[in-house]
Image (cartoon, rainbow over all chains, first blue to last red; front, top):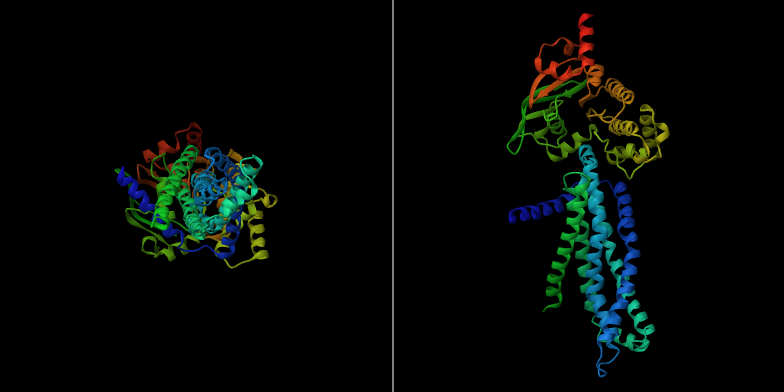
Length: 248
Length: 253
């Protein structure tokens, strides 16, 4: 069992190396990158905006409901919402959600190409299929921090709306809390995590789709396995990066 | 010409190819036949470089595949056209984009030059009206013809077809067989077809390799298949009454 996991990890790193070998012609690659930006980034914006807005609102309400002591100032609602959204919710939990949304899309599209011999067709023609299929996804996901930026903004905005119009705090208190003791490095930390998660989101589902064997049923299984492993990797890297960047 | 010399291939404990040697000739339709599990697909995939043989060599006009460096292998692969069993068309691309794909990837041709070549090969396979359709919008027979168009668009030296008639009606099968034979002669290509279809054997089998349990059991032409006394191939080819009667009629003259 352990040997099997180790050999899969080794195979994953060999895949990463192969992705950057023998580049596809730029005129072809350019179109693939734009298509992946559309499929992975643009198509994800709707769900990211929806989830961020409402979860931000829920964070604000939950914080307000738990501040029962009258000595605790109401501006802490804004402070807690900002910290939760910027440090964890937007970079980490949106990425876990994207492991389901983008990850299953990537695994199933590459897996279907494997099942229908389209990947064999690329290889027989002399195309580096890993570069052709995975490299544009990696480049497209360099735009992933923009998605997370939007998520941060909408999460805090949702918190403000729920806090103020739900009667839990005033607008001035919320904004004061949201600006209080702001550490700019927290934004840097969040975007460093985001870039690492973007690479995991592009490559782990691709790995499971590319090396899958079997038919349509196995494509579904591979998508599920890819979601599990991408989520596990994101959570593990989140812990490691938090320890490294904020722990000292 | 493709020369296969004593190739062996195993998967785990199972030895699939046991020292197969043969020659696939240029300008001829070379057929590989045999029962399921006889090693036909493994032989074809070894020729394509998808499987590396455990021992033995494969020579493409004197170039030993296993001795080529990765760049030379990729270069050689651009000389290969392949028609897959399920056509393997890129389902996100239109018919024209599928056919243009090898040109866009491996030539410096642009715009109108690519368009002219795509029009030419689509006309050659009688599919000039299907340009803008997606693979999912055309029939299985049309998909096979698009796959043939894509395989020949780059003027390949070698054409490989894996079960090109599977799932097709008899008329379309004959059409595909004739198309492959015409193209092979017209462009002087080395064509290797992996097939179960005995109609194809009788129609276009100019050089037939019969594999049994991973061994070359028999090799010859479609005419020789009528007169051979090799028990294994007689049992395989003439297992249907129709072909038995065809053989009897042929032998009676």
